Length: 109
Image (tube, rainbow, N blue to C red):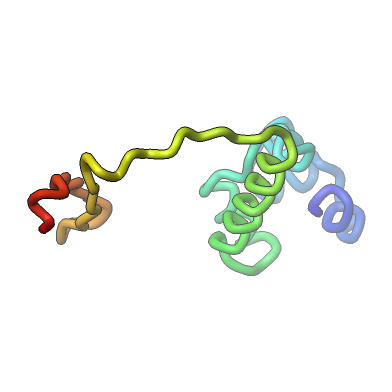
């Protein structure tokens, strides 16, 4: 999108765009050529540069990653046997802290 639409529309080279974003030409080139994912920091830069929100840029990256992963290979996962242990995720009052509590089926009955 940036390579095909934004740079030509603004009549910018990768080098000029990188200068405006405050990143190296190589860093921007890796993102726009699909060799590196958009990081949180780059999402903030794109949001400030082109508008929108950093969350929108990160969601677009996540959607692309999921699409790409689904096309490249079939992901195989062995199913978990739920009879032994049921995990519950409980969030602590502190942000981004999680405690995993495991209870056996017998305790749940």
